[in-house]
Image (tube, rainbow, N blue to C red; front, top):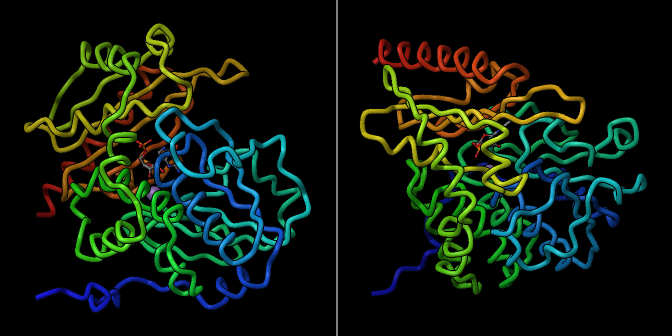
Length: 342
Ligand code: 5GP
Ligand code: MN
């Protein structure tokens, strides 16, 4: 007996608003943007949307603040992505993907120049600030790429191999290869359709989650050497010096928080990575992960960042030791309240 996967219900997932579909159908000169330090869902949704728009006969312009790391260079169409300096003024539509607030686009989006242009936001972060003129924010989707499968359907665009490879990359990276608690039948149904359209799951996993440089391993070594754990919170700090010594690429997320949260005695993990802005200001990039039942997005939001209940982050100005102790205290307080509320 065969199962017709198209019969599975997607009724609980928010469909794209009609106005958004209309804007995409009637615009021609479209700028697509995703967030700084792009991850798999950022670049996958950017390229996926570009292939959908091309199938509609449009020629989208794709822009990112930061260079793509090695892991995403295999994706179809990456050579088309431009940096902030090449972004023009005269688009008739801007689409922002997988980005929870306007600042996360970096200088690719310049409000003095672009604020007159309609801005569509397509995102799945619970901390989204609804900064677009048209916002499609679905926190029930595990990845922005999952929303774009529904967008292609709503636009009557058949899935191609290029779309499928791009979109499956975001699904794989945001779910850590279908291991997060939000991975459900809808996610697997979307995945099945992308596989049928020609995406190679094992190739994507090998290039993304199962690929890291020797430099990154050395950085992990430095982080693991000074790891601490107290009251169910496990954390470590990474100095700018240790990052420089390891030779890790500038926009490479270290991924160490994902590893730390697997420690049985811990409910929440955090990494604090020091960097210096061009002005010399000390900035601490904080990355959080939580086991089910704890919500790190709220703590990240309090410190000016954002994310999802199990994975979030923020960038805080200050000294490495000061910031890490303040943030760990906030995480401990959140954990206490969560346990008390059970
Ligand atoms: P990661 O720890 O992998 O860098 O990020 C985990 C999640 O937190 C992602 O959804 C990412 O978009 C969000 N995130 C990380 N850093 C920041 C930040 O500085 N600001 C905001 N708004 N979100 C962040
Ligand atoms: Mn995402």
